Length: 153
Image (cartoon, rainbow, N blue to C red; front, side, top):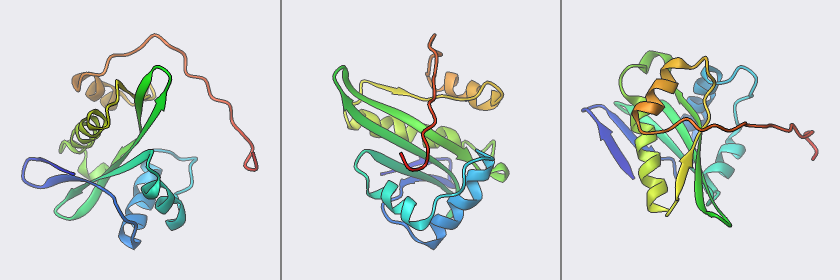
């Protein structure tokens, strides 16, 4: 799958893991989360191989400048999808990278038969929140709860 925005930003599904992908994700992840350690080669390989997840990468002239993970799953109320871990390299912001990633994920989710696509975004990520509304997401009146499990659970 490839989608294009302008002449230089392209989006593709990461269907294999190499040192370049590991290095790119290692550089991108701290721009999204200060607490999450970057995934290892093996962890990325599991994500790429998992039929429930799709890792998208955005490239600017062959350099990875953003990524997004789409999780799709079947539940009793229908096929659903979640967008997670959207990140654009600081140097590439304002070039439409996040829009291209989200649009590629939405098209992929539709192709999988998902009824809805959800995502969460921290309130302090004002630019991201404006983008999601611009792309057609509607803020829901819901609470998001998290229960942290121990590493061995």
